[in-house]
Image 1 (cartoon, rainbow, N blue to C red):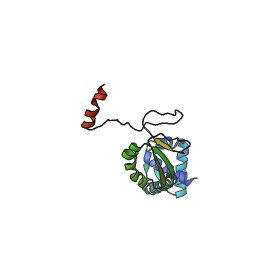
Image 2 (image 1 turned 60 degrees about the horizontal axis):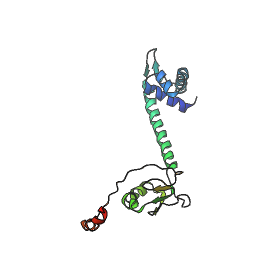
Image 3 (image 1 turned 90 degrees about the vertical axis):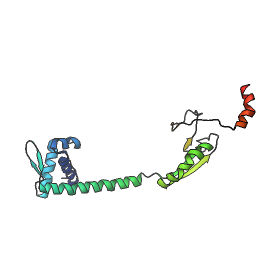
Image 4 (image 1 turned 135 degrees about the horizontal axis):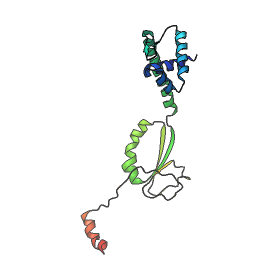
Length: 181
């Protein structure tokens, strides 16, 4: 008997309140689940469940075993998650090409929080108003506005910007005749 599988099966039966629902959630035949629980009870030397044709009831020993088993399974999930997080933690060098005004107004204000959240990522920010050659420049990501010049690249829309022309009254009055004509 695989004790770990039996432990998971038993907790699932208690949580589901029925062998049928537990077996369905575990993708296992009802008879296999029943046999697994019987083997677990034989191994422990106690009855964990009272079975009737209509329902199951958890015995006091079963309740105690369930509580300890549930804690053990939660601890194991937490351990697994901590290793998955460490293994999947992003790190390395990220080269970003971005226009000057977008860098100053949007990206640079966000960098401090980003660096705090992802300390293992080193950013190389290439700020220029002319589009960079992503391949020869070894650029990982470019943030640009407008249509793409190279249709072989993959693009994602990340936002919209409204362009506004601003000037002083003096500029408008000095250029108004030229603009109208």
